[in-house]
Length: 491
Image 1: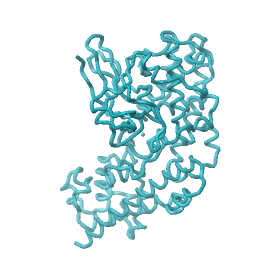
Image 2 (image 1 turned 30 degrees about the vertical axis):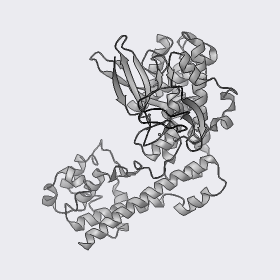
Image 3 (image 1 turned 30 degrees about the horizontal axis):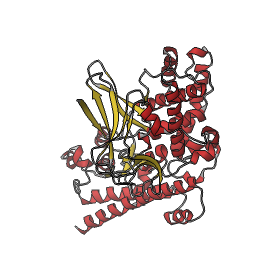
Image 4 (image 1 turned 90 degrees about the horizontal axis):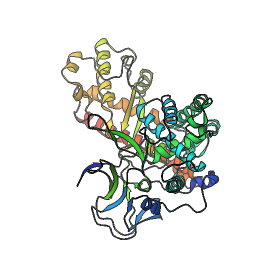
């Protein structure tokens, strides 16, 4: 018997319809006849259901497809412990190279990002060792497995510029289609890679060949970006090794073959980890969550993510994504401009009263360590912190405000807790923020749709789809809030 731990297949840092993109950009990285990944998994002691095949689908692109009906609850794929690639201190070839890797990883900010980059380092190490024939146990099998997995990864890599161009080329390019929303995020990633390249060269320049984590091979920003793209678009966060207290660590893993499943918010498969009582090793499995019909693709839920993450990490855009949102900064100057556009002015945005400032501090929107990023859309039409802040700052009645707790002030379902006049002003301010956000895009929705009908590159097509999705989200928020304002005024 085994104890099962069910996990949603929540892929890291989310349909990948763009296939064979890397063949045109990095033809030298791809072999003409890639090894059979299904055969390799079986050779390494894994299990693959007889009715699973790798195929090119009309809707989802390259992925796993059922060649015949598969009953609900069936095991689809099982990977023994040595197949998944993970960074937990046990996968590097030597203690010295492992120490160098840890030292490098310490330069990466952020816990989640750190774990992804550590795994990216490990992915690079496996790639270098495969090229040099330096694998130990299961050398032939791992060479086949790495090449097959890398091939499938390359064929599924997106056409997002950071995945296909060098960071230097991207930063110097006039990449017009992406302007207006995520240009900054892409640039931030590129600049980090360029800065980290310098750290990488400095830390590794004096290492002995036996201590070098990449076997003396040069690793630049493009190589690291390639590895990071592979990890961010294909790794799953699952249970790792056991801690002394009996709990298990949470680590990103690359799961060959399983990671070829495409995304759906209504998946037909799910990830399971089983712990065998005999050796306590973890077995990673994918099981059928419902009956899978012949020719149906095998689909996992990558997570309830915004379009930003689906695009930057996975390279596709989901139309009408219910979890999408836009990010804004809680900024006094911006709110002043929004209130003027809404037809009124409020000096409290720039100079809130002490009692208002105290509440803003409780909302983490004021103070030295405040988080000024707020969102519109997604699970909350208006993020609760933003709504509460607007209600408080636009109200001059301290006693009325203090009659309500923060959760009430943050809730859009609680209608006008501080009065209709304050509520209308708050909602109109948000609508004005939406108008300002739309103004930062270089084109209108109809112009983008017209461009889509032209013979544009796949990269530009993806960028246009992303812009349309973001603009449509903003318009939907404006329509919803405008309806609420009309209902309030009617009362």
